[in-house]
Image 1 (spheres, rainbow, N blue to C red):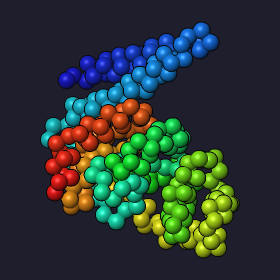
Image 2 (cartoon, one colour; image 1 turned 90 degrees about the vertical axis):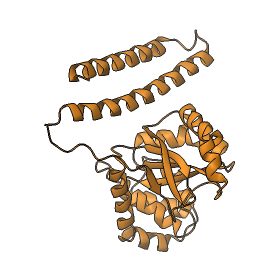
Image 3 (cartoon, one colour; image 1 turned 45 degrees about the horizontal axis):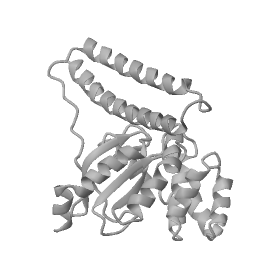
Length: 270
């Protein structure tokens, strides 16, 4: 596909999204049906996710079309994720998984955790259908992201990893060293042990490994989600990748499809 055509498609996609967004914003909630307005917003979120996916595809096409003859093509992304020994939420027997790469200081990650994740937790994770795994991807521009990632792991030493994880996202504007120590006290942790762990480099290598794995998977922003089937080997075969704070309905559609698919049934019976 010629580069000019691709650029025209990009412009058209943005124009369409911008027009739809403007239509929703122009509505006066006092004069229109709130249910219809919420439906419009959900439709916009779904369209936004589709545009992001198409942009990724078009970016790859642009790279290939502009590449000098004889130069190397992009290396295909891995199709599997090894999750042996990782912390997870959900039932150990679940055979569908969500792996999230995120940053505790990232506003889009916080939006997902507060707006979408509670529904996933209630409908899929706590019901034993899906495992959820969180991987750290602290971004260079976020000065507290690394210390926050370390704080969650230090809390995990005292059995409070997920409690700290939730607390960090619940109040993202309070991630200083003092605020993290105060959180530890609120969670009934041994604050002396927590402070010693937090002040060292104990988990730096583990967090760096998460970053390297993210690079291998082609992750270039947060949050990014991988949804797939857990094989008997303990690896996840990736079925879908979402980039950005995708709406609940997109997750629901993919999870329901995988849960009812023959692929899931075949893995579950092994």
